[in-house]
Image 1 (tube, rainbow, N blue to C red):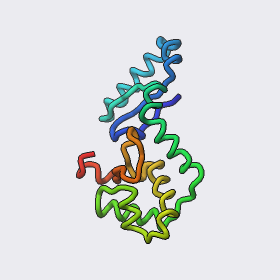
Image 2: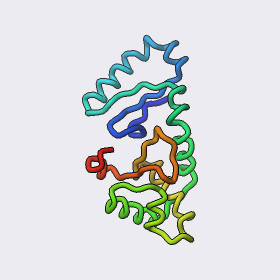
Image 3: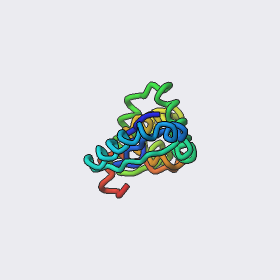
Length: 149
């Protein structure tokens, strides 16, 4: 598997490897992993080496869910703008609160895929180590420092 930046908590670089690969190729991988750790530290980030076991437990369900929106959703510009504006104003929201504040009840089901598309593309942030629900806290990068996420 590969190096993924930005999918975990802000300021974190996650490197996902299969446990068997780590065991079998440790001597070869160790210098690369050390370099990745130094890169992260030098850029003010935390480096985490994770195996398929850890991501299956906390990250994989969310990644799998969001992947569908990356592949199969054509985002609607009007929805994108409304979600951005709402989060710029309120700083933090949930899917439920954003849909309620932005759209009539008849439009909400149509707008929801665009919202998840934005989370999948990191245009809107969420803690992807927890299940995604209609009450998941969402924010824009600019809001991070002010809300303490």
